Image (cartoon, rainbow, N blue to C red; front, side):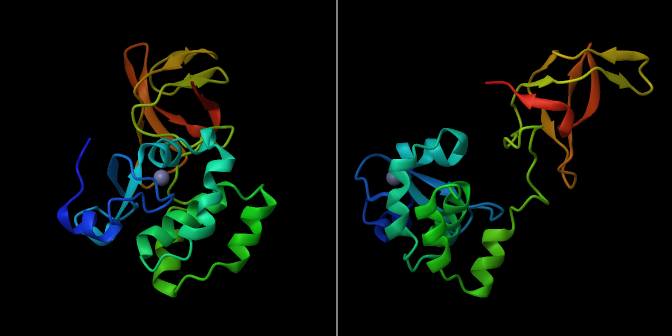
Length: 188
Ligand SMILES: [Zn+2]
């Protein structure tokens, strides 16, 4: 776990910049920024960090705190709040907050930069990350390798094909193959 820089500690006042918790904090890089500048980071408590990284596990009641964080003057906090509200957009209150939220043009571009165009998702729409294990949901003929990767096969430690959100790579039968994300589901 990395520590907060002095600059970030001062900015957040030793509180989680999303929910305000005064627990141990981790600097979270708001992608696609690099994290080299403090402006790219949000100081998060463990609860927020876990759920930002695994949005499918989000505890809806915890995220009521977005009601306050969305009004932050810090663009990185605005962007993260906006994205979490979008993740929760099946909740009427989250819809209401999104409707009220205003981002300036540059911040809106940052917020939208991780749209479907760059995020790898499995057949259920779950976000895939490098290192995940996926299960094949159909038999796949592997071109050039003369075998069929069977439905139900687990592919461990996948990597993501950059610039193509529909493709991941992994090893099946000791062969390194490219797999379409629509033919896999994330293993939990
Ligand atoms: Zn928090």
